[in-house]
Structure formats: C-alpha cells, structure tokens
Length: 91
Picture (cartoon, rainbow, N blue to C red):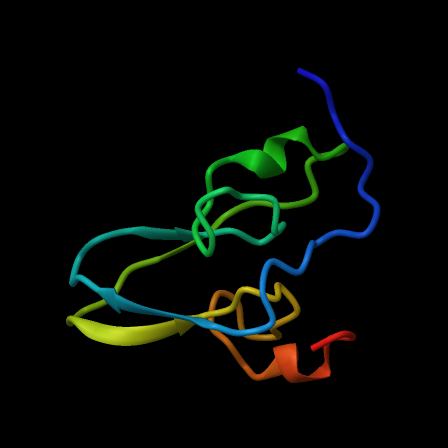
C-alpha cells in the first residue's frame, strides 16, 4: 500500500460541526485525520498516512439524541465539536 507523508494533517474537512441523530448502542467511528470520504466518520483512510499516527475514535451512546461531531479535526474534545472551527484560518 502506498503511503502519504504526515504533512498538513489532520486535514480540515469542514469549518462546521456535523449534527447527527445517533442511535443507542450503535458504534460510531469518528475520523481524526480528515481524509475520509464519509465525513465525519472513518473509512480507514488514515491507514495510508506514513507512520499511521491517526486512528478512528469509537463512541457509543445510551440514548437517541443529536450529537455534534467535529469536522475541522482541531477539537480538544474528540470526537465532539468544541468550537475550535471558529479559530481555523479561512473560516
């Protein structure tokens, strides 16, 4: 498998969170690298990054509710939005 250098990562996918209605007991795998085609969720694209420094963040929920997943990948509370997208250049 070809690898890409770990430069400019994690990539900012969007400068806004994704509001998702989650299901209780379902496992959600959040993308931490920003390379996924299934934003905000992982599609294993992180495996091509040299040294594999990224991995998905898996979470489950006890009840159905709307959850705000980070898409700028700068959050200090992964996988949840903490408003960091407001500080990302170009937003």
